[in-house]
Image (cartoon, rainbow, N blue to C red):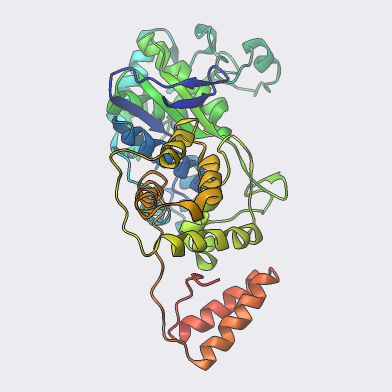
Length: 437
Ligand SMILES: [Zn+2]
């Protein structure tokens, strides 16, 4: 079976062929490191990790680029708030980039080929903006540079919106430096010399331009897959597409792949609603592999309902899987059996990990030892589940009492109490792994 992916640009699930045979160029928008990584980010990066693994398994070399937006209004205002010095944004960015690597690494996501920071790539960004100005797609206005929507007739093609409709919905600000309210900033002027010197004066890049410039710089004029969460479709990806195509006059990306939202009580998880979960808080209660397994048990195009109770339900299946495979050594089979091939075909068919697990659980007790070894290889190498069963720890009577209380608290959904008991257990030298169910 050939690989198929859901393409937001066409609205269809389509067969995937790379532009250059056996080399896939994939760009996924990264985080702004001003805070810890949350469950929504985890969903996105696990999806693209799965795509990365499946593409490599299909014999491709994958050039995977994921950026860090390490200069941004949110970083500057956090530095101003914490240190009364906005220039200390760099320290904040470094801290959260470090945490990001820990948190996403715990989900067993393979590091991308390139992980550029914006602040290390100001020159390519300035050059990209110059090309846009040369092509009449951007203009300078009092030290700022704006992208000109009126010179981008295809604008709206990705998010399926008409320019006239968008224009009617935009509020016009007084003293606007833009020619059109839909135009967006490529370069923001700054009064002091603390940022970067450009042909238009001191300043810093806007958000959207970085991804166009970095994709161009690291991957080339055209890429095969551009990815991110659904919330990036508009305006971020629409703007990226307009910028790049105004420079290259070629389709930017063949596939635009977006994962659906993470929801809490059927509402989108967001900071403003306070229904927000950081990955490192989830890891206090659950093994990161339980979360990865949870993500993979939901198709990426469907909204994902998230709660600790739901994780508690699924962790039993995960540890059952781990115990089942524990006595076997993973080995890649040269001639896949029918069930192995069906599992791989599920993945090739728009990353249907849900279908692959369904098939596996339905046939778990019919597998031959050889099949078990090769399916373990698929689970570990294609789906990225470590399947590690933690070693037994010595348990005293006092520990056992707290463990029992903690289990009761978890079953009652009292996560605060469970966390307190985890801390008490740690003080006794017992690391809670939640391996035993
Ligand atoms: Zn981006």
